[in-house]
Length: 239
Ligand SMILES: CC(C)=CCC/C(C)=C/CC/C(C)=C/CC/C(C)=C/COP(=O)(O)OP(=O)(O)O
Ligand SMILES: O=P(O)(O)OC[C@@H](O)CO
Ligand SMILES: [Mg+2]
Image 1 (cartoon, rainbow, N blue to C red):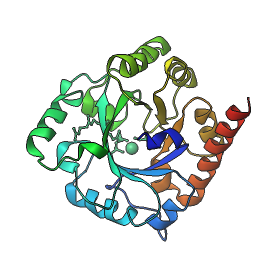
Image 2 (image 1 turned 60 degrees about the vertical axis):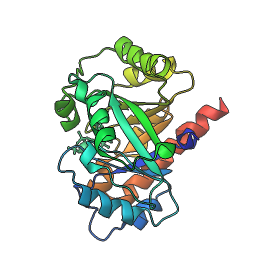
Image 3 (image 1 turned 90 degrees about the vertical axis):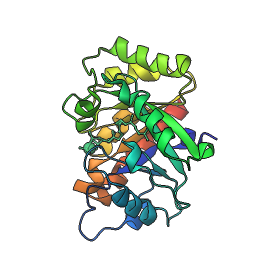
């Protein structure tokens, strides 16, 4: 049930941040994006997570919780499932299997039928997620490709996520991950802020993830990135 195989674009809502004044989650759902992920690294609580999931879950668009720690997982019928990160290049094993073990130990309501993993490769050393996971971000394109291949073929991951949160990534490294994958879906996130940056990254990635833009600029800017992703994928399909 790989819903994400058809997604060009995801909006990631950080429950610790607000929308632009006058905009609603309904407006976000109407941008043309294919899914909403709810998650962030810092300032996350169960209450903030629940508020956003309940608000986004009212519209006709898939909503997935992307927890950054076991305490931010909430259960509800309002959302479609859980995308659980596993950080391939984490320096602390907590973010590879440790937090997962703790979550499973303390949560007796896990619904495995709608729980999936994302194999993250964290690339921006200045992002909170890099500090949090003590990620080794000093990777050349070969190493990024090797992590992607390990994720797909050794660990059986269906989603590989090249994460440049907060900055636009190196297209050569994103392309290296894209080229090595057979069936896994490549998510790219980080610094997408307009039509061109969306289109460029979507020329390599299957799915682009737009985060800060929705909080900083709003839904009109997000809509442009949806168009960039769709146009990139339409052009690849014609080739
Ligand atoms: C096992 C469970 C339930 C949780 C652990 C899940 C793991 C391994 C989390 C590691 C961190 C991670 C990959 C979080 C995903 C969300 C994410 C990358 C948010 C963006 O982070 P930043 O942009 O750096 O943070 P802020 O925007 O909050 O500053
Ligand atoms: O906030 P931005 O830089 O758009 O990054 C999106 C996402 O990959 C963050 O987890
Ligand atoms: Mg961020």
